[in-house]
Length: 116
Length: 113
Image 1 (tube, rainbow over the protein chains, first blue to last red):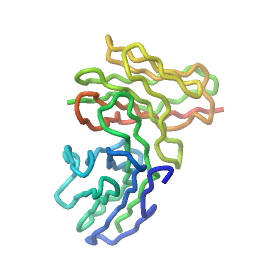
Image 2: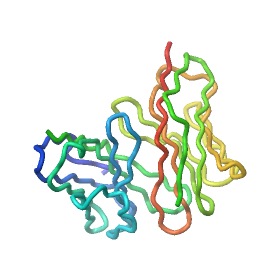
Image 3: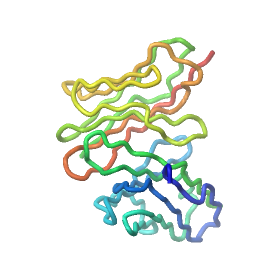
Image 4: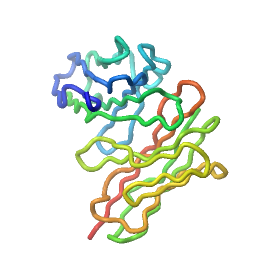
């Protein structure tokens, strides 16, 4: 596609349920990032992928959070047993590669997750 | 590790005022530096970038110069408009190996007529 696509755009879930958030990066982009943004806050890094591997998972808040990437393309962020503090906008970004000079990251519109 | 520090907001200005948003960084090697902008209700988009020392990135009247001696990448605009009201994020990515994109905490700019 023309840009980074995230789905769903909005998700309301009950506390304790599991949710899956999907990111379709720009075709050919090998690096993929997940961030989350709570209301009025900055960007909190969660995880990044280079190809299908995740060199840095340091930002995942707890073991309820996991992410995978298959075929070097689509990525899924899974949150198990959601809690109210998980409510945020989850942003995905992709770039041609990480570390290359001047590589720009393109962001999706985000998934707004609300846990009630 | 790599990090970015930017001034806290909000920054409140009148239209046509001069804008500076400070950004300093800590990184190994020679990172690439970026400013991203998030307009109300919209996603993040790249505003400008610089890839080596003394480079100047510019777009939409905004400028930032890559200063290696002071490890800074301050964002400036000579005359802000109401439509510039947004949150601005400074970011870097190292060019040594595979590194994640590191963001500052963001600075909210509010421009009044």
